[in-house]
Image 1 (cartoon, rainbow, N blue to C red):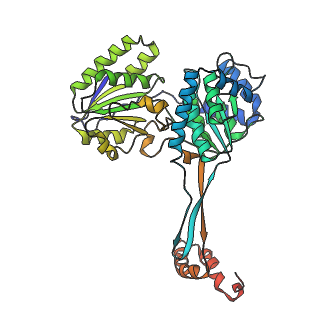
Image 2 (image 1 turned 120 degrees about the vertical axis):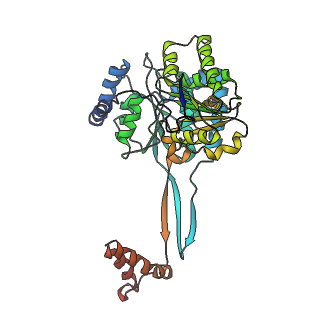
Image 3 (image 1 turned 135 degrees about the vertical axis):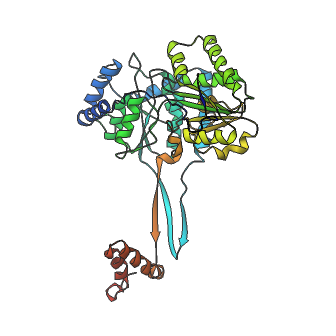
Length: 428
């Protein structure tokens, strides 16, 4: 565990691991291949990267989703159903709301529409993620999206895990495709013979997926460019060091290049956590990969007090933030740059990863300074409207004329004044 003493050096930065060179050119080449070759490219690229032959079909037959749902254990089915209920309850609070108001004598407002078609990406490989199916699909269905395409990398045998298919069925998704990586993002953004083009793409993935989303942003909407998992724990040192260590290790389980940070004004607590981390890694017989992720990403940060803790967290903007100190709930507004906040020792990040109802697709790499986590409104758009009558437009006309002249666009003003000429007297 590395240590940073912000109390002694306030200008120091909390280190954030990087993945090294960003394979932007490789991603662009993959996207261009998908754009020009469609399904043929998906077959070639899946065979190249996943060693799976898709010539027998890219889409998972719809009946397999229901079969998977019926085949999973009762225990898993119950857990998925309860998680789905909680996610849906939370998502229903996040919709954009239509409104209208009288402003300056005219009527203005917004109408809200769901995007017609959304694309969801669910990772594979290191683990299976039925929770991510629920976290992405349920906000889309709550938003009112009519068509949802879900892409997931195929396993070694060319299949999609039963738990992933079961979650898709539960969430109301019938289109599931056995394709992952940057090629999946390209397929959803450009469209292929099998996968129809979407308006919005959402969901986490590796560096290739993240860069592909960045490349197609603008052609389609995206939720965010997600990076490796992050957690920061702010504590007064009265937290159990072993619990803190388990919370850090749980996020390191997602893979390399994550950040696992403890911030405290009780510096001896950082020593306790460092020892606890080593003990936990031995206890669970951590793999070399997990141990390497912890060794690279674990950081202890000493601060002068709560004020400096809030300041450094708002600069760092972690994906997940745990507040474990007396009176933490009353200090929530001081922490404005985190993807999600977990308050108190009984609110571990893991309950948010699966079950609290809040979304686990969150901004990383400092994006929490300006971005929100995935929410229902990502799948909606607001269309503003204006309705003036003659009297309200007549009152506005001099101001429009003045502003148009100031901008050097005189025909904007003329378009308004033309309505008050004799030739326009027949207007309704």
